[in-house]
Image (tube, rainbow, N blue to C red; front, side):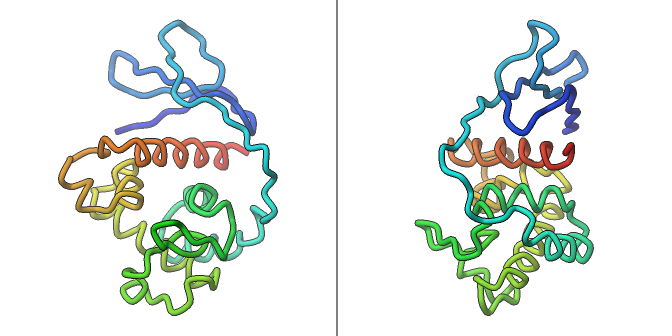
Length: 181
């Protein structure tokens, strides 16, 4: 699947998509024809983030270089997963910046999930494994990060789970925004 993003995006904007006659997806915040359909509506949070979005850039860079995963993708994933809160814990028990489940700690060599360096390096390794497992198909790897790889393999596509569908959209949108700052 090829993603081509067009138009200029500001830090907050509705995103529209268009699939051309060759099946290529185009995304923009300024639709240039009636063929564009709303993909994601801006929903600005009323809460301000008390955690710095750049505090962990040096660790994200380290993990990016070590595992060959895009810096901007990692930053987008952390934004969506924990909003840069290193002490975040989900209802399901996922922990830290990249929201890693305790069952994955040993395989990812994580002894303290709240240690930003360990969490980012471990989460990046896991994401890299998923990208390889799903033949470089980023939306499937992201869906697997959220819903689990077995679920994605069962459906052979992004599972029809609203949370997972929204998760992939959020990360792809954030990834694009970070890439184009």
